[in-house]
Length: 254
Image (cartoon, rainbow, N blue to C red; front, side):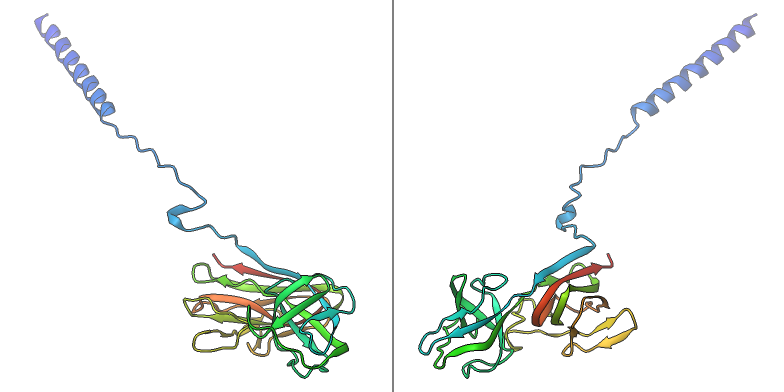
């Protein structure tokens, strides 16, 4: 009988020991709750969409005239959109000796929707027009394309879409490795460092030299492979834009 009691006591001791061990384990369990994370700016890095619309622009061209001794150009017909200070225009017609055909001039005054003045540089001195122009001189706006910082996100594909019953557009792809963002419409120089960028036509794997660019004379959609691995900045530079509506999009691989 005594042995039976001893066995019961031993069993009780074992049960109590197991219960105490389990309780101690539970009390020492560590629960880790993940910290709140701002998914919009983790670690200070902004989330960038995979596809970025760089520009969507409409051609803006009009015939202009001027008088001797007057530095103001006057539209002979209402343009598609009024020019603003800082806009870039080019002239085609050739009856103004003070103007260089296809050169990018900057609008420095635009007092009304029907007149404007230009300079060779943004905010520069107004060009003095010694000769008059009466018809035949056409001014077209060059879209000042958005400059993209590609040092963080590597955009690998660029698309060019132009639509309209009539299309006339010429674009080049340009980039820079400079820490300071250059002005892509100013001449290349030691203090304005940029160059045209080679791209590859995805449709037929044809390379397009940077200084050759792309000419569109009808509605079209084109896709190109970029090689931005060494670039800091990238832009699509319009050389000519006289008709149609064009949009530029970039696609990243990240």
